[in-house]
Amino acid sequence: GNRIHLTELFASVANVDLDAKDWEITEKSQGVACPIVSEAGKDSILVHVGASDLAKTLSADKWRAVVEGLLSKTQSNIILVGGKDEAEIAERIANVSTERKPLNFVGRTTISEVFEIVRGARLVIGGDSAPVQMASMTNTRVLNLSFPMVSCWETGSRSTGSRILRMESEDTFSADEIVREAVSLVTGSSQFLPVLRVPERNVPYVESRPGPQSFEWSLMQALYMGAQFPEPQNEMFYLAAQRLQEVNFLALEQLKTLKKRPTDQTAASILDRVDEVMDTIVKLLPEAGILVRWFRVERSRLGPMPVAELVTATKLLHVRLGDIVSLYVPTGERNDDLGLDQI
Image 1 (cartoon, rainbow, N blue to C red):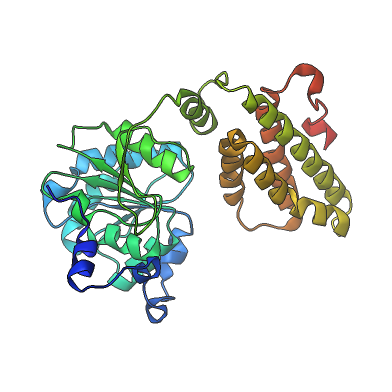
Image 2: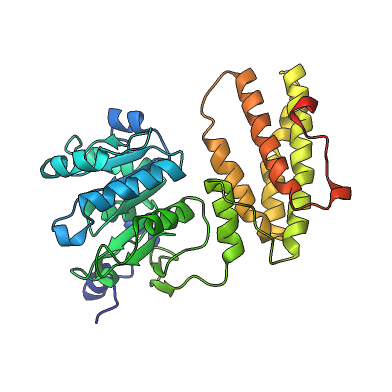
């Protein structure tokens, strides 16, 4: 069958070459005031519960299981969107057993508002539907659940970093497997399932199967799901952990100073450069990437708070990072004075 995206076919007929910027919505269309977006907050996970045909999406029960998994495995707000005719299905999906609940905006949004929610989301999950296409225009990552009724090659997501999960039926993958794939997208980790990857907006899809990356996935499970921390398969990971411990110790020293002297500009300046140092470590030792991504995801959840509280919360996060990297640093080279009593 055809493996060329419809946009490329239309561009060919029109005799034009598409540029990545051609996917972006115009400036005039941006910045719509949206109280619902404020309620949802940034970095949410948007779930589109419907489709033009029920054969293009999951059942209400399967969606509910996916939403429960997302609520359990992430700290992001889970946003449900859809049309007014999908409100009844959405109520069933929103009736989850978890303590946290999804925000149900189904039937409450205009097209412009959905655009803004998609733009602010960390991830969009859905079948072959309008929000998935909107995400291509805002370059928001998508986990596209594609069913046989449509050709994902022709109409799938075009946003960079997205993945298309081809499903013969909703039973092809369990809710847990879909959740795991979504979590790996949110955390920037390697895939768990066979997918089509979207390398860039105007680059053909890449068929990709999970390789022997059990350490990376096991580490992600340990970081996000409370599993046991695995043994590295690459000796360079130990060096990466040691370098992260060194910069983490430096950050804790500056936070200790800021707790005593909140206006200390030298400590604040050094602390501001910690991200740059971490980026350098990842560039030299890519094995450190998953730990740095985890740290930044957790830090992004701290939210606005008084300076003194932010310093304390940031210290606790650095202590947690120190505890993790110390698992992979030889005893004689650890900074064992990173305990809470020392900061």
